[in-house]
Image 1 (cartoon, rainbow, N blue to C red):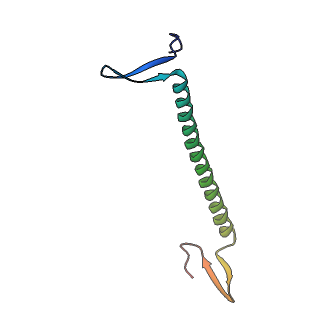
Image 2 (image 1 turned 90 degrees about the vertical axis):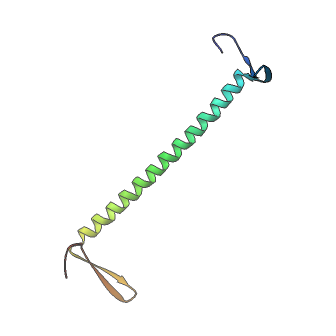
Image 3 (image 1 turned 45 degrees about the vertical axis):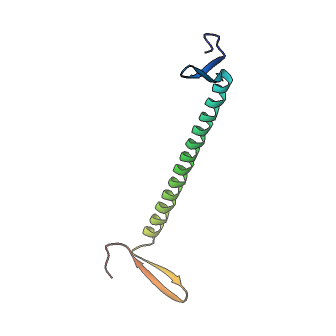
Length: 90
């Protein structure tokens, strides 16, 4: 439209004029579409970052537990629960 110098185009249905579309209409519509695309991309990146933080946190906890040796004592209301590493028998 811009190359041809056309700023408005008729919208027809059959032979009847049903409206006009302007270059400004198209720019506004494209801007809204790009904004929506950007919002979707931001949400995906944020979710990916959250997932990465959760995975790093879980890995750090698992490494901390592994560093405690074959048994880890955790106090639980006056009782002690011993957690053995997977695959080890008591």
